[in-house]
Amino acid sequence: ATGTLTVTPHASSKVGDLILVIVAAADTASSNWTMPAPWNRIMIAPATGTGKLVAFTKTFEAGDTTFTLTRSGSNGWRVVPITISGWDSSATPVVGAIGTRAASGGTFSTTAPSITTPSNDYTALYIAMERTNAGDNPPTINNGFSVVFEAHNTSGDSNPNAIVLAEKPMPTAGAVGATTATFTNAHASNSSAFLYAIGTANQPVSTGRIGGHAVTHAGTTALTVGAARLGGISIVAVLYDAAGTTELQRVTMPVNATTSWGNAAFTGLTVDTVY
Image (cartoon, rainbow, N blue to C red; front, side):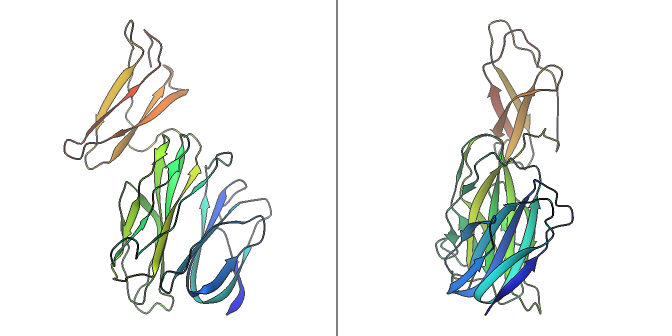
């Protein structure tokens, strides 16, 4: 089958937002999905069983109302447009390698290989599809990711393709780590995933924020801070000037799974100074 689909972005989309279009297709290796310039096709995965994952990105512009997606060789699909605000268009995106259900070594889980963010203030996205033929449930995901969108097959659904999108803040540069979503239907293939990272505006931490003042002593140019987070994986520590208006540094402190405690150091500071 060959044809076009009209994709409508969310009504909240505004100029400068990133539009991410995710396609979960039931098809063969000969299928193709395209969008016209200036769309960027960041992923078209080889067919895994009877499923294929495709993703496109574009910056939302004035006058954008609908977009055209062209398909060939596919007889079933689920398409989702995602609007992402607060991203940094000057930061180079990172696109990871595709991971498949078969390569993950199981029948329920799909692992996306790790990527490395080149600088601070990125957000890593886990993007996955699953082609299934039975009722499913929302998947679970590891490695500190939070699911922000998912659509799965329900009883009587004529389009049994699942899409999963999850995110993980990366305030400091480094490896994201291989990331796995676990589904509830067993398949030896039919699923693929990859990691995609974009720069994000350096925004203040607003969730579960705890503040306080600290002072460096004479001859000391570093501060070590610690905090506990029950059931957490990491804590983002942000250092401001004494007025609390200018961010100076931010670091991620891993949380110990047993003690729930984490600590991290700010270095290169000025002696006898309030922060």
